[in-house]
Image 1: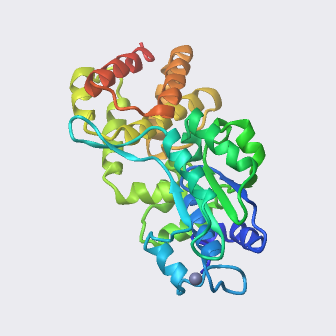
Image 2: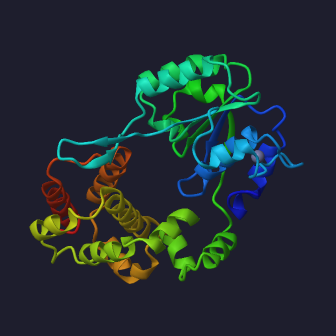
Length: 327
Ligand SMILES: [Zn+2]
């Protein structure tokens, strides 16, 4: 099996070269949307495969590969954010990896392996481990049992405990070259690959998500309102935007504020090239201190993306603050 994405060929080969003696704790880092999770899974499968190819990659055909691909390999554990059902019956992703999940993984690696080979525990996103969970995991990372490999995936490695980071062999995945990413998107049937890559900050998987979802329409709707701060009505928009997912809303607004700052400070637009004229004009009108305060608040909100009780009211308050930037 080849690298999950063409731009991962080099880190993939570097991993495969270590297959005989893999790092017992590997930390895969890099921006969101470059395929770290897919690389981690491919690596786990390569380690578990019982008839690996000459380069160390998984064969995709043996019993172990079959179990892995159907989610049932007994020597593989994924530790990730769990889905939780709220009182209203909605399903949401937990905001943290809890300590009982980490303890369960720690107990699991003390057992003997089912097959004779490696055992792999994948923690993704590792920066979501809460403090107790991180501490529970740290103990076993310090002295991993024989043939056990931990793979931690994170796009915010600075949020990991330094003691965890220092236990891991780190592999950084950078942004792919623009032409390679655009070529891949084109092959997936995505039109406007260059424009979408600008929007996604150069991350091809985010660009693909933009292309597939209704998010592009939602983005345009949000930005057309933000483009005319003097005319926007916070109450109406708060009601309308509460249907937009907090993640999408955050991404759109965060990049919009980033572009306003970039215009103001450097005279250039990074993400929203289709709004370049409006941004140039608004960037000059903006009160820099208020704009910075709002951008900082937005960055903080992105760390949690908690769903508040009254989303419409929260959006309304945000819109009032946004309007004040241009008073
Ligand atoms: Zn195999």
